[in-house]
Length: 289
Image: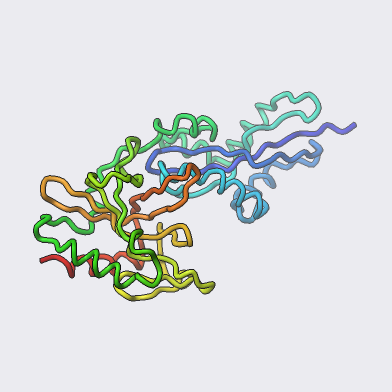
């Protein structure tokens, strides 16, 4: 009987802000040892996950990893790895073969040298607070203005009038409270005495052509527009995360999710919002007194 080896594969989700690579197991390949060619296996991984793995496996992995985005943002990239090699019969770890493979593939070692931690997905989910980056988000303000110098009433009134056809007016403005874990994440709060508010700017019209309507009355096509970090769907829209402190208002761009895994409504501040950013800046500037 020919000797066979088991090769275990994982997707490495790379979170640059956290200096973290999260390993998610995606399958095992069993082959005859005499058919194993290290250079072929390296080339297989270097093709990237889209070429080397089935579309359904990628979708399933991304769905399971998605909750981490609430705390670590989107991964900057996803890289395939070989995580173990074993004798298929005895399950003995073939450490020497794996070491030789890693030396040839080099990717894992390059991240380790850059100071990244490589962690198992289950460990990260259980200890996510250990990996949330500490950030100063002031540079993401698109407006900072004295409260008395901003016409909030007119801003809300215009937004409601311009989006009235597409969203219930009670959902235009949502009171929010900052998460205790990360300054990027805000959670809907029924108590009106909060210093955080979310006001919608862009949302899906629900049309099959991916049309997006904005509070300035402009429309975009999702497939033809650069939305960067923003996701817009029947459950997600984009708007302003507004905080009030010491008589100042600050405005940042956020993605609002009306239905999360734990049935909470959240807004997450984003770094990049593509074509929406200049539109959102121009709109709120028109309400500065």
